[in-house]
Image (cartoon, rainbow, N blue to C red; front, side, top):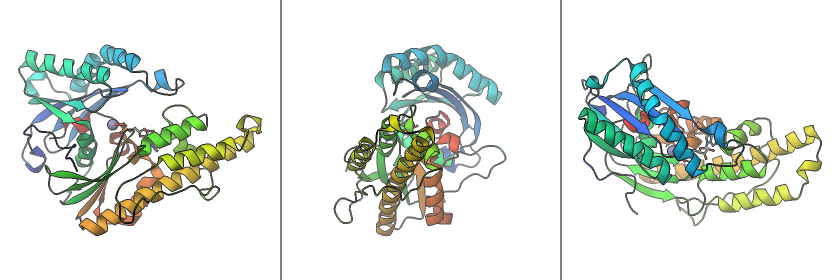
Length: 338
Ligand code: KG4
Ligand code: ZN
């Protein structure tokens, strides 16, 4: 399989140089968060600023690319200024700029690219392009003042679950990553978002479904768990999504009373979430058995899911690493990691 997550450029591996005090300005604008952060070369986050567009798209059912690009244009420079201010540093102290290269919405990405290129030229700083998926995984190395720096030992198996991707990665070292399993249809986050929409919940569906699931019965509905061929590390969530839709169509949701409706939504959400978690867990377990890694990582927006975090922690205990909640969904600190 391709090594899509590995960028071609030469990169610093500052995270392993304990005395490395270099500072990076990270810029992220791949979707609907305009973000900037200052990160030290050992992964310490000095500031992490985000202007979210969630309120614009909450009731539109998803991100409208042109609107997102326009909002990025308005916010990008104020967010960068705020990141410098919050870290109490000035441009002279910044050693380099990292910007999300992609994948993402092209109009949104271009705003970050243009700002980063202009600032790199104006302040004479080196500019590095960072793959967004790799950045999600690198969020596992971030830490803040008062915390212990994570000491992750390679090789690792990484489960990357975002809105557009679901991948199992075999990470031999900091640079050499291989995709050993991925979704053949929907990503896990995409499935969460679509199920949220089917249940009439606001965008993005992931956190809403997860919240509704807390009050539901995960055994209420028997949804399918697609394992594909024996031993396959690939995923498929489209059958599950269709099964959820079929169950919802059996009921006239709008005809239900308030309490009944809430319980139905919670039960569907909990049963769906349970099916997704079981598949993600079982595939990761297989990958761990096959590759015998020294650490297991979880990353991407769906890593913010409380139930998934808890179950992975229970299963892989001391070998398990994941980003702090706020560094799971899109942010710039993960882009600033060396
Ligand atoms: O990584 P991310 O922020 O953006 C992409 O790069 O795609 O992931 C966003 C995805 C969305 O699909 C969102 O619904 C999902 O992560 N997500 C969650 C939760 N929080 C965000 N899914 C399940 N449970 C959550 N708590
Ligand atoms: Zn993302």
